[in-house]
Length: 278
Picture 1 (cartoon, rainbow, N blue to C red):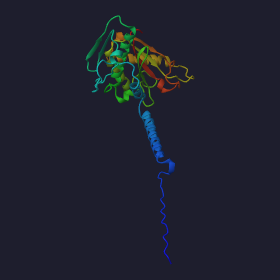
Picture 2 (tube, rainbow, N blue to C red):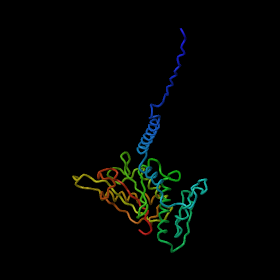
Picture 3 (cartoon, one colour):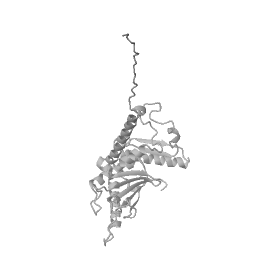
Picture 4 (cartoon, rainbow, N blue to C red):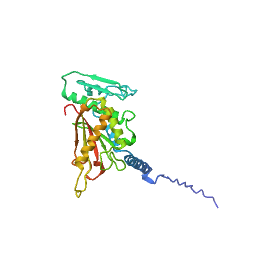
């Protein structure tokens, strides 16, 4: 029998990895999702672990208004820590004198009869410097961590408002009295020292939380006034010039900081460094 030469057929299979047309793109998307979730939970943890004042400080850092210093922030780049717009936005009329925590005074002597808008910028710059010195945004704060929990600040049309308030585990005064707690004494002394940086007038305003309507003798008016007066005395004991005090008032429970009228957050004192036009 004659041998037959059968053709040899070779089949080649093309193996596609990654489940066809899907490939591995889903892994990248999943990794992005996990990273975003981790960042979200880190943010939630940080919001819970920081105080109201610290959160405000972070927010202020990312939303600056005007420069508060003619000196470099210490950077090593082309601008030495400043900005190409710094000289354009700094106020350059009037006179602003700033004394730092070491007692060294820096005076910005500016032209008289200048633009009123720039005069206002100079005032805001000085108040911002006081705020930064008090809260330690450029270094170490003058206040302890315990005291900082009671403090928030803001610059308004009236001036620099420094608000100190009760928290659930800390009180500024003994309950129902105007007897200051140790943290209140520390705060008042620190305020008096830092207020020497400027010559603005000072106002002290007391606020307390509401009492139940069934209370026959409601002491909110006298209590808010007494606490404001006590803080005023502590400021003067700390070295504040009595001539700088413009007013000491009590507002009772009429201007709550919290919608819950009986919340301890409404027990507070506002110390205001008034602008010169107030």
